[in-house]
Amino acid sequence: MILTGLEIIKQVEAGKIQIDPFEGKQINPNSYNFRLGATIKYYINDVLDPKVKQEVRTFTLPDDGYTLSPGRIYLGHTLEIMGSDYYVPIIKGRSSSARLGLFIHVTADLIDIGSHNQWTLQLYAVQPIKIYPGMLIGQVTFWQVIGEIQRYRGKYQGSMGPCESQIYKDFEPSS
Amino acid sequence: MILTGNEIRKQVKNGTIVIDPFDEDQLNPNSYNYRLGDQFSQVPELLSLGHKDHETILQDIPAGGLQIEPGFIYLGNTYEVIGSSKYVTLLIGRSSVARLGLFLQISADLGNLGPAHKWTLELTCVQPVIIYPRMKIGQVSFWVPTGDIEEYSGSYTQYDVPTHAIYDLLGKTQ
Image 1 (tube, rainbow over the protein chains, first blue to last red):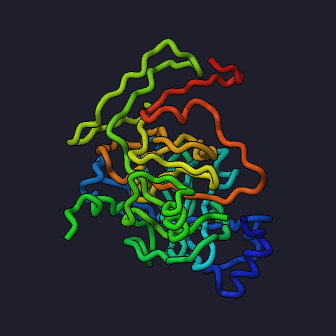
Image 2 (tube, each protein chain N blue to C red; image 1 turned 90 degrees about the horizontal axis):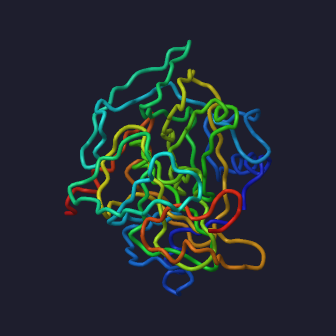
């Protein structure tokens, strides 16, 4: 079952959901709108080989915006640090940015329970689109679980700012 | 409600969820990482929905990797046989793969309750990406439904290879 907006507020106040900073006016009837952080990364290579640690360029979004180009995957991040040890977060775009053809994740909307970070967003523009730091870019929903909870302890835990793929570690011989 | 990783393990053990082969190491806090199968098929250009006048050409994904290009759809499948008649499956990407700009589905992540099979994946990429057979490419989550269950009886479950569209959008079966 999905939490309503009023239930999200209650669980934030009870400390069972972390949304920091939390703004009451960003609550929706069954989700919370999050903001885009100021840091963006993109890969230097054109061809992306998951076996290879990919080098990135990092820059800060100017206040007057930056135009994303189709044909490149950009990594952004949520301004908020978010997570829950009790509910599963699922991130979504907002229909307002979706109507402009902006993807904020690439078929990876499910967040692990216990993962507390500024979440990395996978930004992909169908047409050139301008983005601004602090804009309300997406929304997060929270879902009840069934079964015993084991919290996330993976490689992205605690990350701040956008974090590039660590998938090359999958291909390293296990020690 | 979504099943935790521990609950997925429990339901696999008692046979309510099929994930075969099942490897504990691929279990996440609330999902299971599945692998890419060994074969792919490219979707021909100018394909109208539901037409069957092309042959499905299956090719092996080379062990050394296959570079896929933006602007095309490649069909792959899960290496594992996955399914449940009791819990609803959602087949999605992993953030590690998503961060490279590789889509695993084209806005169709919802599976049907019913027989387990190897699920077809719709791969498309933002920049050229190299894919490898049996790489951990996506994740599957399981959800508790409400209501009486009528299992999926469509034809896709009989296929354990990457399978092209069978039905057209007008709702007529071929």
